[in-house]
Image (cartoon, rainbow, N blue to C red; front, side):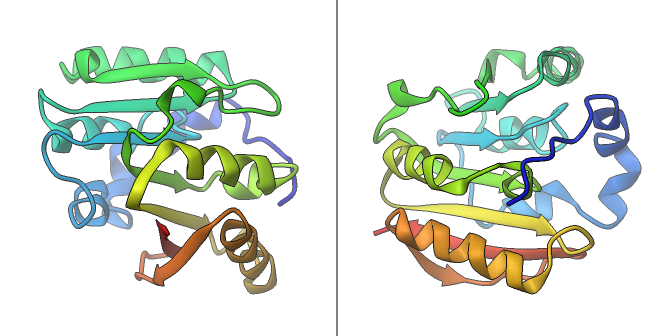
Length: 185
C-alpha cells in the first residue's frame, strides 16, 4: 500500500467503454450482486463499475460510491445521469483518512475495491470501515492491477484484510488483476 492517488484526469481513460474488452463489469460483478442489494464501492473514480452495479441492483437497490477526489465524483454523477441510474447512486467524498461510511454499519450486502487499495497509505482503517459496513457473511471483492502491485504487496493486502476480520474465500480470475474475495466472518 503506497498512498499514491491516481490523478483525476485518468478517470476519463479508466471509464472508457473500450476497457470492457478486457474487464467486463457485468461478467465480473454478476456472481456477487443481485437486485435490491446495497453495494459499497470505495475508490469509484468516474464510475466504470458503479454504473453497472446500479443496473444490477435495480430500482430497489442502492450503490454508495466513495472517492477522495471531487472531480471523480462529478464525472460519476454526469455519467450516472446519462445512464439514468443516478437515483440509485449515493456519491460521497472520502476524507484523507476515512471513507466516512459509519452511517452504513451492518447494511452493505457487497463491497467492491477495484484498483484502490494500492493507493492507500495504510489499509488497516480502510478494511476496518469496510468490515463494519458489511452485513455478517457478506462479501468483499478486492482486485489490484498486477502491473502496479507485486505478489508480495498483494499478500500484504490480503493479510491486512484478514487482520480486520475478513476471511479469504476465493481467488477469482480477472484479467490483469490480483484478486481475492473475502466474507465478513
